[in-house]
View 1 (cartoon, rainbow, N blue to C red):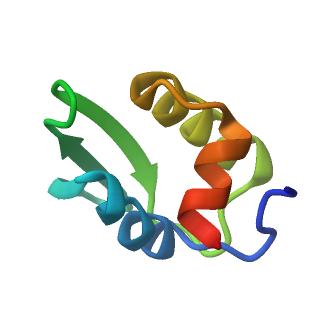
View 2: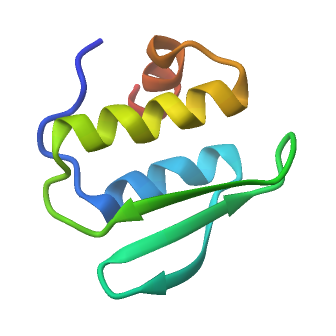
Length: 80
C-alpha cells in the first residue's frame, strides 16, 4: 500500500487514536502523541498540511516498530 500523499498531521493524529494515541501536548506546529498500549510510547507529529512523505514514513515506521507490526499492516489498519 502506498503512503497517502495528502495526509495532514491532524488527520494522522485522528487515525492513530485507533492505537490509543492521544495528543498529550502541542508546542507551536508540533503535536506530541502518547499511548500506553502495549507500553508507553511518544511520537511527535508536525501539524502541517500535507506531511512530507519522508516525515510520514519515519513516523509510521516508529509506530509500527512499537506496535510490533509491519509498516504495510499498520497502513492497512489505519487507512482501510
